[in-house]
Image 1 (cartoon, one colour):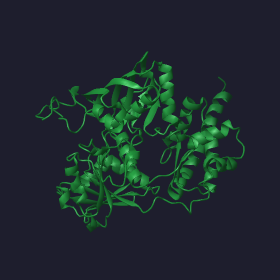
Image 2 (cartoon, one colour):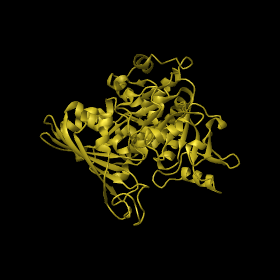
Image 3 (tube, one colour):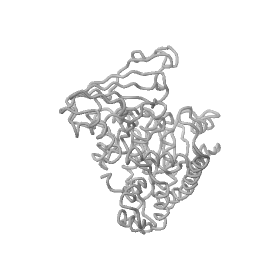
Image 4 (cartoon, rainbow, N blue to C red):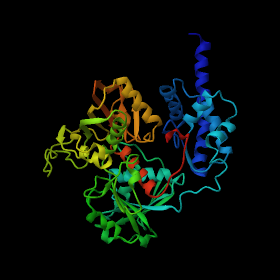
Length: 485
């Protein structure tokens, strides 16, 4: 290969990298000034590096056959900023690909045709009402990740304000340790921002968000109004109470309005898998469950398959990362087998996820069985769906359908799709989807199908929790292009 050829590759890379770098402040301005969240085929662009942006452009080859031209994306962002849009979610990847397919031309005219209903409407935009106060009751794995996501979204005026965290303790150094756990995470890496400690007032200032820490041993000890908090959405991530009687304690607290449980709810509590049955929520639902991480991972895929092919019966086997509920070394545990060392064993245990499917998808009631194996990794799990379908299909047909569903259906935030023979569990740490279908692992024989669904049981689930919070707080913005609907 000639030196000229080598130089051309490097010069092309430098040009594209420079263009991606120029996109970053435009993405930030759209986000913070106009509350416009940008993405490329569902992959968020806010707070991403130039290299990440270029990789997302390259991903489009899997969808459209050709890599997305970063210059088209830059032009689209530049033009969109000039047009002063109202709040929205804008997939610039899909729009840029459509612009190129139509032969390019006048970008402003193209955007007016595609999303004219919100252009020039920033000053008149309805941002969904007054900001809603959010309280985290508990600050464990899910609580801290929900905090990270809420703080990240606050930069775009998402109207959800994390106002307080309720924890037990209060001993010397407690607040500093809480701050450290938020700042550093062995699985998810360092927090993207700054954290200051107000020891005197027992608060953390995180990226400019003032978060009050309230020390209490039970909800009945808490009065949120003392801290200027009212009509709050309380996210209970302790798992201590899972029925209406226990969770009603939160509603008795002055300043609290609704309670959201980050675990499967018992009794008549609605178990919501966002993107599937969230439309059943009403203002009268004061106590809500976000179901489990596994239920969130499998229900969207099961719905997609059932809608297209029909599900006669099936078995769900979960290969799940160990959790804080298990013992680090052998010790007494009230649960069967869970007393054995989580770091040294595969632990066969039960899961209620298969039965829980019926609460979100009643049409699958009684059709599924389930079990689980806890394995020695700290995060990212897999659900294996062994299904008997109503009709015969093929690997290609099933994968093509699920790939399309991940990119264009209303469930595109719940379902992701990957087709690589080299991916492993750690590749999915931080994935924001509820579940990721591994296309290379799909098995089909007539009416029998086996699907392998990865999921970040911590972060992906936390994203689903925040989506429910946005829904009940009436934070709903239009999506462009409209193929999502």
